[in-house]
Length: 377
Ligand SMILES: [Mg+2]
Image (cartoon, rainbow, N blue to C red; front, top):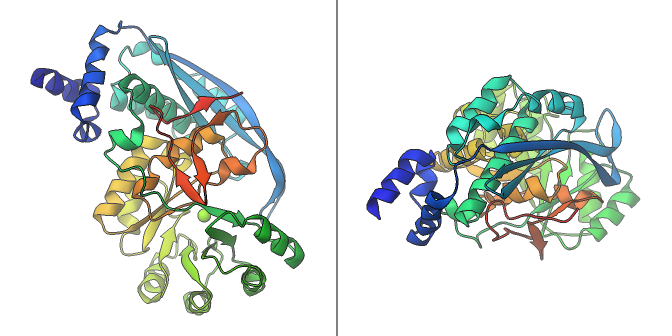
């Protein structure tokens, strides 16, 4: 028994996760010894998400989001993954296809060698974060399925400490904003995009309909720290719970000053990409927004969450427009997060998975093994 556990720790590359595994999980792993050694099979396919509503940002509007869906198969078990590529981040069906065509997982015959496999994928080419996330998520799903355990449990997290998910109210005419706010009555926290001329009008319009907590995302829109502080003080009086990326990510000293003086927590989004940025965000922001498409998947996202927690920082888990595949993968972090912004699959009309659910506004992590998804399309 003991020897098997040691061997597992040695060969799996999963030492941190393995530390929290219960004996029953280890028993599930021992069954691996009876599995045949065979190469991993990797498949991918571009897919286009149809948005329920037109999505408008400062420079453009769109009704679709390109994603790539992936599968990794081992000994008859299939893990599913996804990469989402909103156009403003620079990846596309073409770049993902070019990158993923180079991924040869047949050189690996043990899916538990996660570090080696993901390091290999990472080194094929720089960038391509969403495409890399698509491989990372499929591998996590596969390994969790083989172990018979969902990832929140492999990571040693409880199930029921998940936060409510926010739901984003887009910038629009007051009548439309009021209507959208009423339609979002299921949600216990709403997210509002600010950083334009009409910030106060947006907040007052929403407040004319509901008094649920609001969080705001400024997307680097405020350039002057004193004005930013005035805005935050105004927001504090109106039930706002945190301010995401208030200033340009380059204005580090201004941002540190703002965080020190702000009555509301400040959260890094654009300023936070990889693990190194968690260290840089310490003392500059109150917390971080982790997204799998920025962190190249679950492996780094988990490390970032653990680091931020160790630093005493607040953590939220966010998303792009994604199917329930990538959303469910992200939801396994949610039990250890202060806030969640996992509304991405609710915004599309052609989801091909079911997994994470929102019940009474709260994130409900799926308990099925792996990332917990079931293919429905
Ligand atoms: Mg943001």
